[in-house]
Image 1 (cartoon, rainbow, N blue to C red):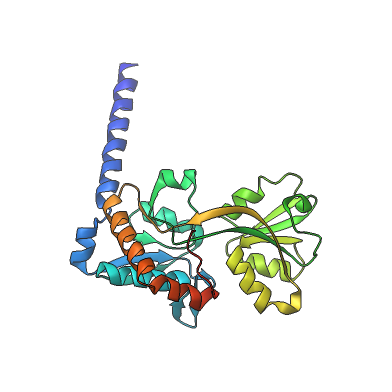
Image 2: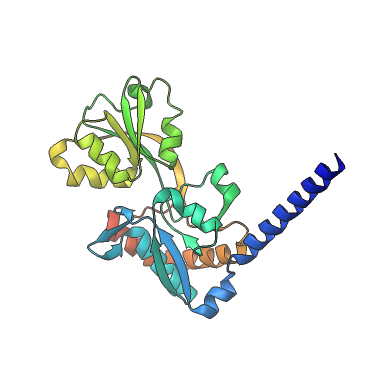
Length: 258
């Protein structure tokens, strides 16, 4: 028993040291400023927020991040990876910041530190059938949604859904609705608006909000100094018109949280 207690104490102590070591690896803003660049990760598959045009990474969030970095006096080194691995990589200190349409949730806030929101949106129901509009209309239906998202979390809460089909990328969820493999698709409001325009031949119709959320950049848990600098830069681009210009370019409206 004593040996077991000793081993347990050692295991707890080792885990605590590991936690401190991981936390210590997160670069404070002073180190980023000295280096002259901030490593930022996004998905690159979520148009119009972050996506590739040929080999060029672009989108609303890419432009916002570049504007933030300019205010902070640093350049960005971009990394792209699957959505469900972004916050994990942040916990492993593989990058300094993630900006990829992550909604702020209690669960995510246990693992990372969120900066102030860079826009507000929510998950809407998209279908070809105009009768599928609200949460109650999803009863008995097959719904497509991207894995690792708040869209999935909220679809799971809807009573009576026949089946939830998950996909690694939201574009695959969209394709499932296009080809009739699912009855509905739950995604971001602004992404849905883009899909309706681009996929006019499929007759997509946007229904009700399933939920509303605040979307924000994330940094390593406890890296409050970096989050604070991001917040200062965010306030600056919102005050000087930079944010409004970027938002108008991508959405023809200002999508900041009101």
